[in-house]
Image 1 (spheres, helix red, strand yellow):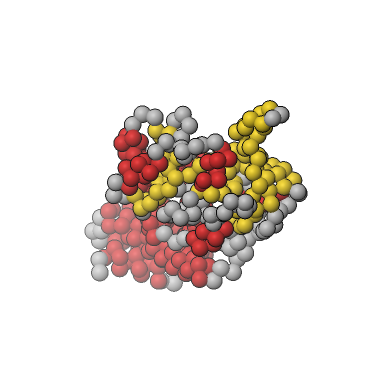
Image 2 (tube, one colour; image 1 turned 60 degrees about the horizontal axis):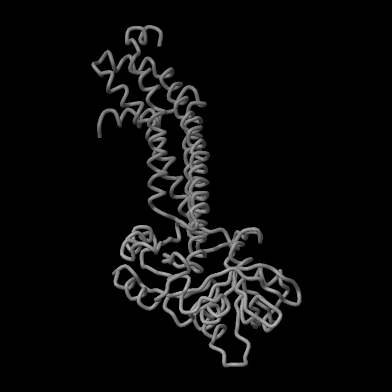
Amino acid sequence: MSLELFIAGRYLRARRKQGFISLTGILSVFGVALGVMALVVVIAVMSGAERDFRKRILGLEPHILLMGQGGGVSNAHEAQERIRAFPEVAGTAPFVYGKVVLRASGGIGGAFLRGIDPEAQRVAIEGIDRESLLEQLKETKPGHTPGIILGRTLAAELKVAIGDTVQIMSPEFMLSPVGMLPKVRRFQVTGFFSSGLFEYDGALAYIRMDEASRLLGMGEKVTGIGVWIDDVYAAEELGKRIQEAFGWGYWTRNWMEMNKSLFSALKLEKTAMFIILTLIILVAAFNIASSLIMMVMEKTRDISILMAMGASRALIRKIFVIQGMIIGILGTFFGIVSGVALCLFLERYPIIRLPEAYPFTTLPVLLEWSDVTVIGISSLLICFLSTLYPAMQASRLDPVEGIRYG
């Protein structure tokens, strides 16, 4: 054991004339622990919210969209074959997309109509498994009413239930004996989906792609090709490569671009919470500094004797830096342990229920060890900085004056 560590440990364990100094050190440990625990839990909740939003969005949107300028993609089968040539691609599916008006007995409202192929790979709707999707959007025989899946908020606005019929009015017009009239088609409500995101649940409807093509007048074209990949974070780079491969007349968008504002807000809030809660650790660090300053005042004679015996000023500085870091390490350790334990408990037992205003029913928790590492390093760095001033003051003592008046 080094001399600095030995003396620092003795100073921490020794009974002092001023019991308030010992109490300040103990409170510093608890302050650092509380700040670190709060940071671990809050950052884990923010990460969990980001994961939950990402999961819900990717349950409704492809990772990459390939769109054609001037009316869509004309040869969908060939385009899918070219996209599947990229090794990162896990699946593709064409889709038809457009704005329509929905009318039911209970109301009327605008919506975004998405025509999909239920048999296509990787087609998914949040809250609906593949078997249910195939059943709810099954191919209908001539004379039968095709099915439609509505967002729960949209269905509530239209006041429809399973089995009710809705009319879809398309912006495409057809010639009739009385002039140009919008295309109108009846659909039977076969299912609902609920993503927890209002912009989807309140404005999105799914039907079969062939029905959507006839209703929107797409002919043999499709609006675009949805692309699913294994690594969702590689969507931006792969999207650029796909666009370069198809050349002029095509463009791509990825899920991060389409939801940039949401994830930017979550990232900003996570950063703001990190900065705000770090202030708790900063307050505890001031307690460390104050306890060390008072200890320097109490140990003036001891420090002077050590320096008279040949101890260097660097050694004196190290004694008080080590002493402060012991407090910081203990507080950081207990804070991380308690924070991780609380996060694991909330993950296993989601006892905290959230009101309906939130898209998730329980508190989302995602413990990322990279965040825990950053929090631990930040805490130790703040504690280290708080020891510098008292250590410098201790090393600047005049041993003669200290022995005389200490």
